[in-house]
Length: 214
Ligand SMILES: *[C@@H]1O[C@H](CO)[C@@H](O)[C@H](O)[C@H]1NC(C)=O
Ligand SMILES: *[C@@H]1O[C@H](CO)[C@@H](O)[C@H](O)[C@H]1NC(C)=O
Image 1 (cartoon, rainbow, N blue to C red):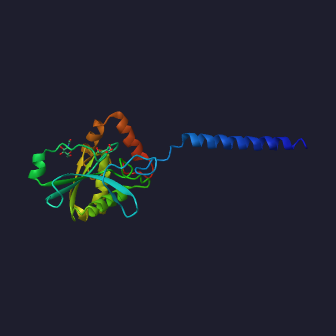
Image 2: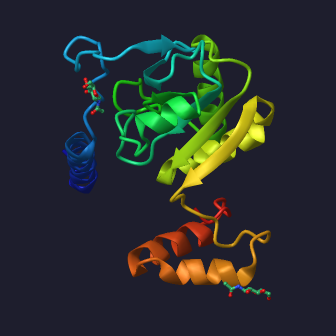
Image 3: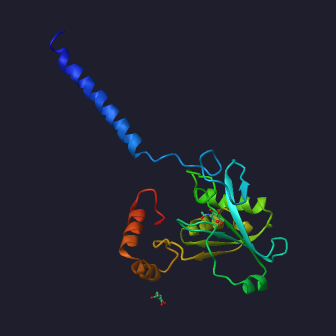
């Protein structure tokens, strides 16, 4: 063997080792595949679900006056780390007096609804519309978004406004740089956030391509 071949051989071995190490590191840090509800080895399905036109399932929970009789239909959109099981502080008296039918659902990727990694503000709005139509709750309904569940409400206002009787936000995350809000109110609200949240909003605001601030 010619002596000049040795360095090349070592380089090859080094490359092979590095590749092996990288693929091992990747395997180690790669999150495990999600266990889909109802699939073999996955958690069981315990709630009613609808099947969307793209094949995904959404789990839901109904409450209040039966939808056939109710005068007001309200779809409740849960926040981060929550589900359709959230408890709404509303009395039976109020439900009957206002004749309300509540529809809760697990957003894509939560609870017993299938994951949808490419979900977006738009897809969440259309998920809500399809859920409403499959359950035949009527042409118009209210939406209430809690916390991080606010952004699907923004989606509904933009993409399916003709389906809404009204929209409400409960402790929503806010766009503190929205020009339509008086600057002094935005500033006051922002200063009320804890420092960690302020930093999160700053980062989101200054990240290229995410100009919405949240
Ligand atoms: C919601 O409640 C149902 C019925 O009690 C339960 O089977 C389900 O696991 C709960 N979902 C979550 C995400 O906690
Ligand atoms: C914000 O400014 C407007 C007009 O400049 C004023 O009327 C309003 O009271 C201010 N609001 C707060 C919360 O400071």
